[in-house]
Image (cartoon, rainbow, N blue to C red; front, side):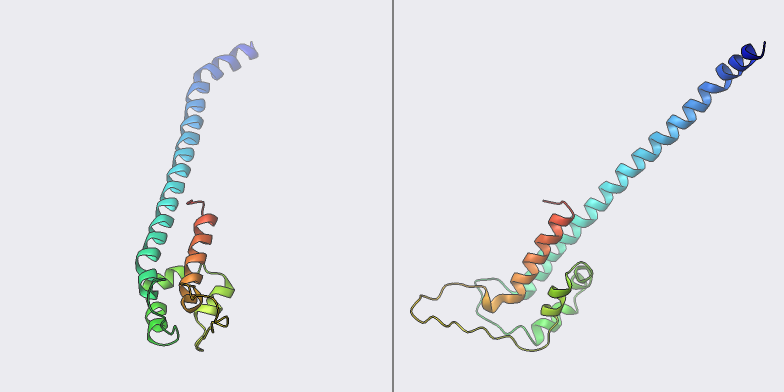
Amino acid sequence: MIWEEILSYAKTFGGPIAGFIGGYLTSQWQWRIEKEKQILLYHRELVVGWRSTLIPMIGQSQDNPVLWAGERQRAVMSSPQYATLRQHLSARAIEQIEDPTMKLFVHLDKTKKRTSDWNHHFPLKIFIEEIDRIEKQWKLV
């Protein structure tokens, strides 16, 4: 008699309880997937903003050499895009980018034809490498 009552209660309440648990787990799973999509979208927007705003502010590899310390450095460091990027940069990159001293690179080998090297564009190279590293870390590429 006791087992019959237990089975009747299980039939009566088991379905709704299983439905509630299944619905709850499904909604939690969908919420988690949506959250990951939103984070991925936010990370993509950050990277696009950094590339489209900061890189042109710093200069391109074909531009004439310009000293980094000074107005260009202050303009980049005071931009909102740099503020969003700074928290993701490595300590070494922050130290190099925010160093107020002037960096000079000398082309020592006079026999070789001067190519468009990145030496005088050292902040551009740092920014590009760091943004690439962050993209890989966030699995955007």
